[in-house]
Image (cartoon, rainbow, N blue to C red; front, side, top):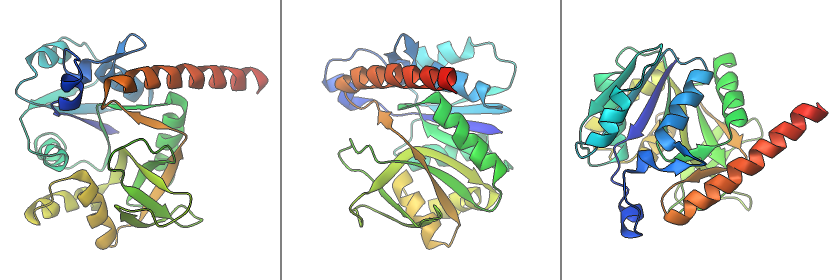
Length: 246
């Protein structure tokens, strides 16, 4: 399975708060965000990994080029105006002809065990065009609300909640061929953000399902690093307790 990472953002909010460095190279519990994603993808049967970084990320490019993996790792360098433009470039340069792709942004921090269950669910269920990660943990300035029926089929994606117990997009997307074929169409329509591409998939009648993650934390602020570290430590303890108690 192909995995894709959007790592082309500037991390402007982190810079404004005094963080020195590139967002993909932020360390959470001692591990770079980009390295953590690659490791998790390798643990979940990655056949190849494609990454888009911006032209100001020479340090990150050098780091990625020095990695020795047993699968193809293709790094593309281009500064893009938006998250969807980054996705478009990834698919045009490295994902052409892909049957299935799992896409995430570089700053998404999630529980590894839950992610493996998510990938397993996607690979075992071929009745959908995509499986989107959602979370009830809302800690974003402009969350994107995802509404699903009791069978987890997504009914709407909107900027405002329509239920008393809303879930929001977690920034992780498993997409099949029909959804991937919509990427160039969306570009022609002038789509600029991933949230609008998600809305377009619903408008175009694609069958999308939601998969609930307990929590997904985006590293947008310096304080998010501490939150992510505490979350991962708690998740590790819970998973360890579960494995012992069976």
